[in-house]
Image 1 (cartoon, helix red, strand yellow):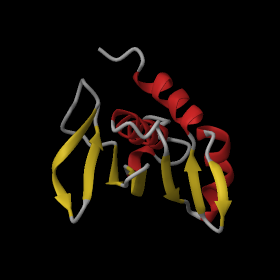
Image 2 (cartoon, helix red, strand yellow):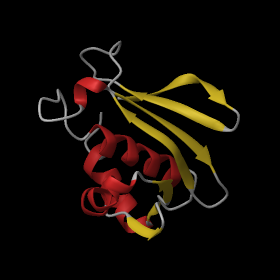
Image 3 (cartoon, one colour):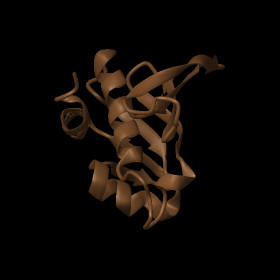
Image 4 (cartoon, one colour):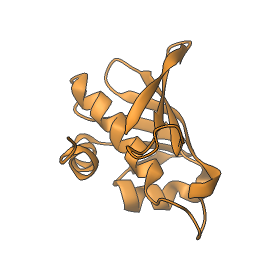
Length: 126
C-alpha cells in the first residue's frame, strides 16, 4: 500500500510503501513533484532489507514508480513521469519500467508504459 506520509517538502509530496500485514514497516519512499504536464520523481529509496540478493521483497522501486504513474494519470497527465537515474540503473529502468533514456541521466516513462505499470501494480487492488 502506498500512503502519504502526511507532509510536503516545498512543492514535493512524500509517500511510503508498506504491506497490508504490517503497515508500520516502510519498504520504500518516493518524493513526487507535480509538474504541469507530468510527475517528477525527485527521489526514490528502497529499504536496506529490500536490496541485494537476500531482499525481503523485490519490485519495491517499480511499485513506487507505478504509483507515480498513477498520480500522473489521475491528474490527467496520461501517466507521464520523469526522473534522473543513477547511471548504473539506466539500463535496468529501460528494461523493467519501459523508461526512455533522454540523455545524460534523464529518463521518462511515457503514457503507454505508465499505463502498463499502473495495470501491473494497481489493477487488482481492493
